[in-house]
Image (cartoon, rainbow, N blue to C red; front, side):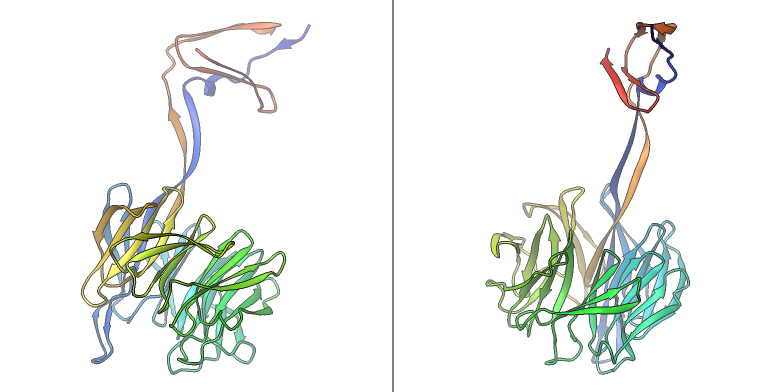
Length: 390
């Protein structure tokens, strides 16, 4: 005769544990307005935060000494911002500046373990390197890829399987644009491959990761655009022209394995399937977008709209292109990042007024008496063996 000793039933009654990701806020990098004719910063770049729960927008930091702002990366405790020769490290929970450093031509950022990968490029200046890796804690340089190895200016970064895939476009040399992916082995601290995107893959402006597939949106010579697809596992590469783009794309983003983009001159956003090279849909939004980011958790997307000199607005759209919210931000909201956090807690489902369990120890059967609640019985290994709703 087997005896059962009840050692844990409390959590089964009226209490449920949950863990889930949620979008705590949306960080907005506003580029501001720099008057190139006078050399004056009319509206400084800034960092702001939009709260999806309340619909409120708050200014976090203004960057008085910068002409523009270009990139953001985030880890579990900090976010890193690149702005006109400055790298700024902020506390993710207080938004206080932790430390900063100067780095001419700093563009985009990505985090890998304790390292921060940085791309570089600047008009009219040849730099000693266009890829640099820093210690993310101190922001000190760990190593560089010298310009003798990579002589072109670089832009976006994605990290997959301990490699950084870097868009190489030479975009700061007008008429001298190229189209490549540089593969940086982060463990070996070396470029291990350079992948040519082909004659139609010139000037990769945005780089996106979907599983082991890397997509780039290429603006070519601004008379049209293309999408390149590179599968890491097989090495398969394809580049396809976008037939409805005549002037280059102002913004693009990846969602649900599809690339969304907008022609510079359009107010509609196109949904494109890179696997089939098909245009699936064009959503009329009534605005020319500047920044674009998808929120897969809440099935919506955020976009920046601006006149580039006096105003900027952050829009929230549902997936059908309907406006959910619109808030005034600052000039040129060009980069939008989601601050995703994990909610872990215990939800009180129902109060248990009384519970009786007998006999204990038990032989063959037990009796559980409760006025309300869900009964769950687990074995010693933590496996659910019985469940009953009362």
